[in-house]
Image (cartoon, rainbow, N blue to C red; front, side, top):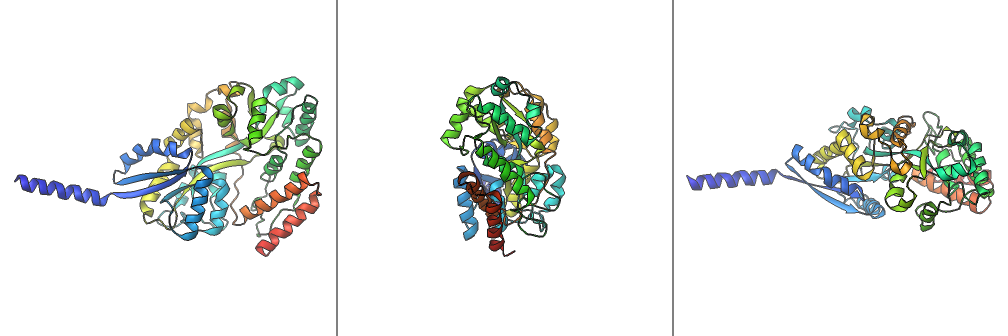
Length: 410
């Protein structure tokens, strides 16, 4: 009898082991911290799925993913993707279309802010990933510099002309308006986009790099540079960090996430000196965000889909990410949580999360075009010519338009 019991237990244990699905998820820092923290909850729901977390630095993760998707092997079953790489994967393929059965991701569309949903959706209706966090664009400003010149933040952001005038006042005190004028152009081209158009391409697929929207963006950035109002410092450089620490720049256009970086490692000594507002001129833009997708090469797509749903469609999971790694939720239902009303000490007690949530729900949704990444690079080169070499706005943008047209034969 004992032998029979032992054999039966071994058979049951063997069957349970055989039925365990091994799944891998590839993420970049600090998403790994969040995933590891919430995996026990996922295991409670799906005890038959064993998850391995693979972590790399931001660029290493995306470079490895580009290679793995290109060769058709080596990718994790679930992969994290930052918004800056979505267009590349749309163009080059390699990710499962979650809009199709058996996934039917369209059932979750109403759970997310519109723009985040559309960022991972192509013009032809493919859904290559689901959003997990977003980055509503805001302007961070130094309260001390504001007080020095006696300016009002609402007046400053009322128009781009008012913003530049503030820069001229700051210049008299040896302070720059912003680190890099190019970031102003980057914000403007992402706002006030007609329905049906993308950032770089129209509804008919034609590039828009010499349109009025791009001319306005480049012209305002050029004025900032010509008047000596920007520090000519690129983002993520040591000079950029130092400018924040020393207070030599008065404003920065960024995603809501910047405050967390400033507080924890960039410039913690500046606590209480910062505030947050909408961007000048009524500009409403997205400035970052993360998504989860499933590579077509995955042999565990059913289990992978369960993990993607857990990480993206569960309000508590998104709130946990907000608490631990300051990843702003993509689900508006979370914005009623009491933590959104908490004053932020680093921002002098401002209830800035309410501002972030309000902006997030008003940002216009724009579908991703396969050529966005190429067009963005070409526009960036054009802005370099305009700002650094003195090339006329129309000349640089017309050349950029021609380059994109040739690339996509439009």
